[in-house]
Length: 235
Ligand SMILES: Nc1ncnc2c1ncn2[C@@H]1O[C@H](COP(=O)(O)OP(=O)(O)O)[C@@H](O)[C@H]1O
Ligand SMILES: [Mg+2]
Image (cartoon, rainbow, N blue to C red; front, top):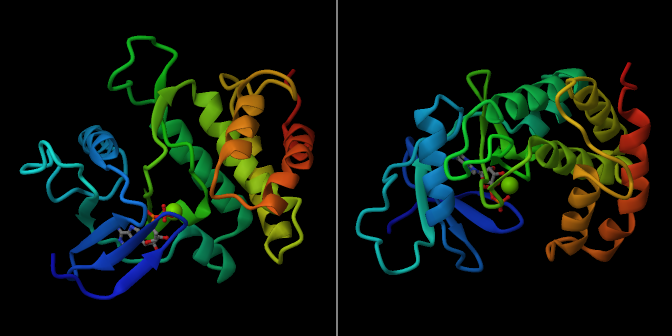
C-alpha cells in the first residue's frame, strides 16, 4: 500500500500517513490485528472514542494474517504531549484517564458471558490517548482482553507509577497524574494488595512484558508501594 511519511512510532508499531483522513498502522514484528480490529469496531458501534477503521470486517484478509490496520487519522497532540506543553494539568490528565476507563468498563463485554468481565485496554496511559478537537480518543489496542475492570486500572496505575518512581524528568508529572487517577477510582473497583488481586496481577504482567528493560522491571515493587500509598482510604 502506498503510504506517506512516518507519523508515529511506539514500542511495537509504526504509523504512516496515507492522506489527511487515514493512517496505516503496522507492527514491526508482524503481529496479527484481527482481534483488536474486532474490538475497535465493536467499541465504535457502542459510542466509545476509538479511531474509525476503514475496513472493520477485514474483507479480503480471511486466511492470511492481517498485519495492517487502516484507521482514521487523528489530528492533535497525545495526552502526554498536551501535559508536557502545559495545555492540560496533571489533575485533568488523571481525571481524563479515569473517565476513559469508567466509560470503557460500562460497555458490555463482546465475548464473555460473565457479567464481571468487560473489555479491557490494558495499556491505557497518556501516550495512548490523542486529544482530537479537545476530545480524547484511545489508540493502541494491541493488549486488549476481557476481564475484571480492576486489572485495567491496575495496569494504568503501574505504568504511571513506574515512571513516577524512576529518575527521568517525567517522574513528578507521572506521580501527579497517578494521584489524580486514583482519586477517581470509585467504590466498585478493588485493586487488592501486594500479594493478591488486580494490582498484583498487573505487576506480574508488567514484569513479563518483553518490551520493558531491566531498569524498568526493577522499579515494580516501589511502584506498587506508591500506588497503595496514593489510593484513597475507603470508609
Ligand atoms: N489514528 C492515528 N492518527 C494519528 N496518529 C496516530 C494514530 N494512531 C497512532 N498514531 C501515532 O503513532 C504512535 C504509535 O501508535 P501506537 O498505536 O500507540 O503504537 P505502539 O504500540 O507502537 O505504541 C502514536 O503515539 C501516535 O503518535
Ligand atoms: Mg502506544
